[in-house]
Amino acid sequence: MSNLVYLVPLFPLIGFLINGLLRKSLSKSLIALIGSGAILASFIVSLVLFFNVKSHGGEVVSYFNFINVNKLVVPFAFQVDQLSSLFLLIITGIGFLIHLYSSAYMHEEENEHYGRYFAYLNLFVFSMLLLVLGANYVIMFIGWEGVGLCSYLLIGFWFKNNNYNYAAKKAFVMNRIGDLGFLLAIFWIIAKLGTVSYGDVFASVSKLTPTDITTITILLFVGAMGKSAQIPLYTWLPDAMAGPTPVSALIHAATMVTAGIYMIARSNVLYSLSEVAQHLVAVIGIATALFAATIAIKQNDIKKVLAYSTVSQLGYMFLGLGVGAYTGAVFHVMTHAFFKALLFLGAGSVIHAMHHEQDIRKMGGLKKYLPITHITFLIGCIAISGIPPFSGFFSKDEILAAAYEHSPVLWGIGVATAGLTAFYMFRLYATTFLGTFRGTHNQEYHLHESPSAMTIPLIVLAVLSVLGGLVGVPEVLGGHHELHQFLSPVLTSEVKHESVHSTEYMLMGVSVAIAVIAILFAINKFSKKPELRDADGFGKVLENKWYVDELYDNIIVNPLNNLGAFFKNIIERKGIDGIVNGVGRLVTYSSRQLRLLQNGLVGGYILFMVLAIVVLIFIWINDNFIFSFFSKHF
Image 1 (tube, rainbow, N blue to C red):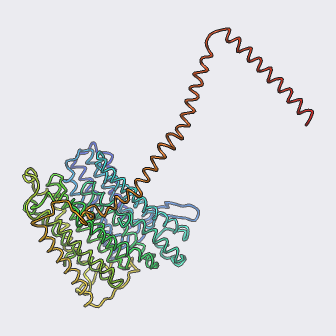
Image 2: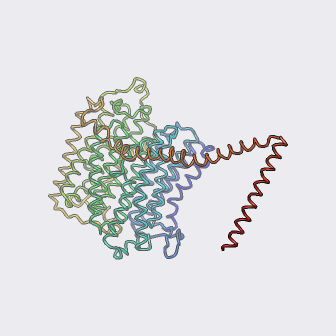
């Protein structure tokens, strides 16, 4: 197995280099083949590694010492175990489908930009693979920063639009805030343990004080809050919709936002020793889940609804991590990757058919024009709503059951959020696909199903959204939760939840019943009479996202911009530049005046010579007087 591990990130890196360097000379077909083929090759190797791990367990493969300073040794090493091998399949499998979809979706781009797009996409996958494979926090951090860079490049892919550039910059800056917390946690670990390798850190936790553990885990969580878009660092993710739709699918389903979940799951040994950190993770997670869900119910941009849905679902995952249900959180990462990639790519198919229109109020009745997109999108909506036996039901209810044992209050908020999820997803579905078409006649005339390169990934993801949850069927439903057994060697701090079967049936029944009621209400309300006007009252607050962006602008962005303008205009231009330029102007003026002395008049030159002689005599007399004075008295 050690002979194959390096190939997983190497293939996307090679694809990035070829498409990046030769983008002007390669054809679009060849660019797509190289970009997609690189990810497919990584997926095949990841499959081999997965089954090898399943049969023989994991191992650490070390290549060389990346850092070797005094007693600190940080190897460039990959850790292939149950957790990382599962994430490899998610990243490369979903990533390949998104690359395949992109080959058709982005085909209108010029050759150079088409190659640039696939180069960035390959680099994105490479960075995420490095993050997951790293055997220590430093290698993880390198991949962590890599996905941050790629998100910046891809969100601002259409860089001629300044609004898109602002969205890319916003994502980059907000992630840097979280990354500072991650970096401080790494420094703290080094200072206390002298190592950053997972095995050594987890084996040495007894050397850490409770304060050390709590500080480290909270700082790591700050990093996760930025990367995985939790309150208060979530506002970049909805704005990331500025990038191409397949990029949104990649960010939300297979890369970047799942990094925070992976990092905390990987660090489960540390988190299990800090009740404060776990409680913080759970509270922030459920608060984010509910808050984002309330915003999603009043959004009219098809991608914005899905974006806030992702923020909400990530909150569910953090809730699972916070209550010790690490397997449930990872399980939801997997199922969410299936149906969220499906939903985003389905939204892309709709946007493609509508000639880049994203306002759902201008859609409607697309069911008959886009049959494959319609049925697959419907499957994604059912899955995310948690209706059995679709995949989202099993992972969501595992988290809710664990939350109920931890705190019925958390469970209650989680169930309410699940109801909101079902409502806003079927509001989106009904407004988009049911009723009558509300777009222009020109749009209606050109409506057609997407090409096979786009519909095949939709079909595959729809199948996974239906069947993907079967790997985690709980015992109460007659299963053995194969995923839990598979991950148990890594997620050693998993809290065992042993509810009686009647309680589990009750919890499942309540959540499913609320979801079904929300679905029926949404379809009945929006299929025939969709909301075509801007919201008012409290609805306007939700439509404007609780005015959080405006709040951030007023208390952070604008004051910093004003401070920057002060330093730029007053300190730099009038202060520093004023002094430097003033000296230059003084020298120029003085030289210009001295130049007037060179007038060519001999009489004037003789006068200056006489004056100079007088001055020299005066200086000589005074020097002799001073010398004599000091000689006599001192």
